[in-house]
Amino acid sequence: MKRVLAVWGSTGSIGVNALDVVRRLNRAGASVRVDVLSAHSNVELLKKQLAEFRPSRAVVGDPSVVDPLSRWSRNRKLRVRIGVGVEGLLESAVAPRVDLVVSAVVGAVGLRPLLAALRAGKNVALANKEALIVAGELVMDTARRSGAQVIPVDSEHSALFQCLGGRTGPGPGVRRLILTASGGAFYRHQGSLANVGVAQALNHPTWKMGKKITVDCATLTNKGLEAIEAHHLFGVPMDRIDIVIHPQSIVHSLVEFDDGSMLAQLSHPDMRLPIQYALTFPDRRPTPVKPLALDEIRTLEFHRPRFKRFPSLSVALDAGRRGGLWPAVFNAANEVAVQAFIQGRTGFMDIPKICRRVMGDYRAQGNPLSLDDVLAADQWARRAAQVALSRAA
Image (cartoon, rainbow, N blue to C red; front, side, top):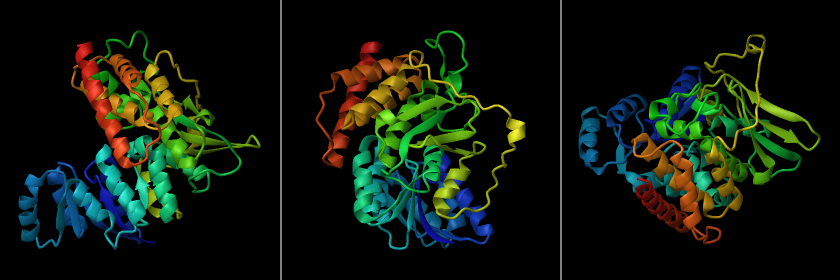
């Protein structure tokens, strides 16, 4: 197996795990070359990655680190071209040797480079949630036009992708998609959630992730966002995407077919498995993930979400059902509200209130015609969320 990768967001959780997968695959006889690495601000870790993988390109978020990083790389006889920000990512998106882009950059900064990579016919292992949430129609249409493939990295969407035989886009015979959710930090919490703190919200029972996504799991917002992603990835209407709480995090999602059959993907929770499948697709290779012993698991629970207790899930699903630019508005408002909660500037249960207020103030502009429409809605919602926060204070 041969691959040449661009790894955007190489110092984040997904990027670090992706490089660990590359390391293991190459030790097992594969030929996976990393030709591009990008990092926002963790330059010290990026240096270690550059020294190990020796890519031809690197991209950093801060222009002030370019000169010292260039001197450092020359001193170590590394021949690496260093780019900056979105422009650097855009250049790397069309790098001729790259055949698979691992897109794990956070936020809207990765949207233009992602579309550029797809237009260039590059397959993308997509871990950037915002891309499909705020611009799903544009992303999938661009991939269809060029013949590029979007391969999901999220565990739930990877599970659906596997159950559907490695396809995205609409297809016959699918009755519904079922996304599983661990329930986050508070599913078994007793009493009011009004006064819970940041440390409690960040205490996820199964996964180790960044702060923002961990809070999204605690509010169940993450599952609403994943439903929007699944809608675009697999061409299934929002009203045929269900969510169940599954505290064991063993069943990562299910597909129900028209004949009543269900297929599910099961494994211990370890992001290296879906990352590796995205890198090796359609092949399967051994992983260090512990095999399941079903006789030891014994119990798999499934419950309906408690929508009244976790109102953020309802708000996210409402944005998805409205479609158009509404998911972009919701996503931006949620990012601002979650950041304010992490910084101690607002309460846990204020997050859905702020999102509702922003969506209530938004005047729909119809379906996005371009990425500029999406980014304009995103910026409007961020400003509106800041205003809502100041009023709440």
